[in-house]
Structures are given as structure tokens and as C-alpha cells.
Length: 201
Image (cartoon, rainbow, N blue to C red):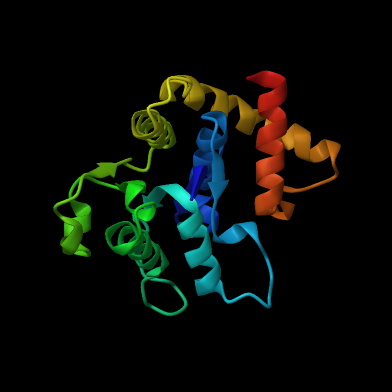
């Protein structure tokens, strides 16, 4: 298990993309390595097995279970986030001496909303981001600093300010490489964030 790796379990939808980028930015800015199911696009790999491998590797986990709306096409909710949260908690509960050292933070949109659809986690400390990106960044940064005990993790307000500037600069960075926002892959997100931080942070 790598103490630098942070598993990110969140919606991969267009309306969540700026939140996802904010989490990536905060994790990288804090000195950690983001990991998620999007990191490898191999049609020969079983997705569930890939997620299990990533979870096994990661000491830290960030889980956002806020997106519970019904899918417009199927009329059903997406349960990937609760499933991956369960895998992470199961690894911590039933894993070996290394796996039980895992640490996690769970976000929902509003305080106590999760009790209406996933009441079994009522005994845990759930954080609400209120669909506010700066609040999400502040929560992630504070948790990473506390969970890792690293004094090098910057304050969340400062990271949120940097992220706002990064998002303003991103269209210019994309234009320089003849790319559009819809061209961005997970690897591209990581690259642009890392390059911007080297020049600006």
C-alpha cells in the first residue's frame, strides 16, 4: 500500500467535471498521487478487478456519494460510488495489518441527506460540500493534512484560490496544444494540473 496514493471515488459525469478537477488539483497540490478508475483505459482489463487493485494500493480514499439522481435514460440511479465506498471500507475492515491503516473521507451534498438512501453509514462522519467547489477543496485539504499529519499540505482556501486561477488559465493552455475541453482525458487533466503547479504554485 502506497502512502502517497489517494483513491478518488466520485461521479464521472459532465456536470461533475469541475468538482472532479478540483479534487485532482487539491490532491496533487497537497503532495499526493491521485488514483481512480479512469487512470487506465484497457479494454482487456476487468473494471471491477482494476478498481480492487487501485483500492488495495491506496492508503487514502476520497468518496463523494452526492450524485444520486435518476439517470435520464434508464430511470435508475447510479450505484458505482456506494459500491466503491463499500469496497474501500471492506478492505479497511477485513484486510491485513497494512490495509486496516486506510483512511477515508466521505462527502455528500447536504448534511444528513445520505441517511435517506444509505443509512447504514449513519455512524460515520460524513462531510457536506453543499455543491460548492471551494468548500469541497477546503474539506479535502483539511482532511489530507489531518489524516497524513503532514504540515506541508497548504490551507484549503489558498488551494481554492489557485484552482480558480488554474481554471481561468486552462482554455489558454488548451489552445496552445490545439485542444478543446472535450478532448481532455484523465491523463491530460493530471498533466495540465502538474504543469500549471510547477509554473505557478
